[in-house]
Amino acid sequence: MQELNLPPFAHKLTQSDSNPQIWDILRRKYIVLTPEEWVRQHVVHYLIDHLGYPKGLLSLERGHAYNQRQKRTDLCAFGPDGRTLLLVECKAPSVPITAATAHQAATYNQTIGAPLLLLTNGLQHYCWRVDLVARTNERLSEIPPYPGRAAGLGNVAP
Image (tube, rainbow, N blue to C red):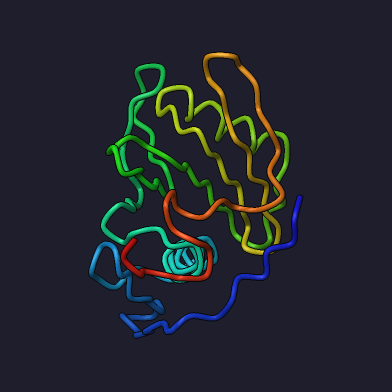
């Protein structure tokens, strides 16, 4: 586990009825601001601004079928080849990252097939490189930058 104190980002907030909402740059609309959504938005901005993931290759709450049931992933990043590169499971900061959380993400990844898996509650994160064929996981000390881009360059063209 590595501490990941996600840096601040330029966020837009509004109020609808009694619910605070945050602007989602990927879905291009305001979303109810839950603790989990706050983490998800921080991760999105961190991937784009600090690790060079292209905004157009990120997808939030994408549906997928698992065991004949419809599930949703928190966040997927796609590689240059269009395949899923990174699967992210977000929890609220008050929710600890446990073995059950890891099992949930690994289960989703059996159908998605991402070679990188990230679990985060915004305060702690776990990142693995996954080899589904060899059925092995390698724990990583940090989230890898987008392929072909250096970390810290944000959305700079390769």
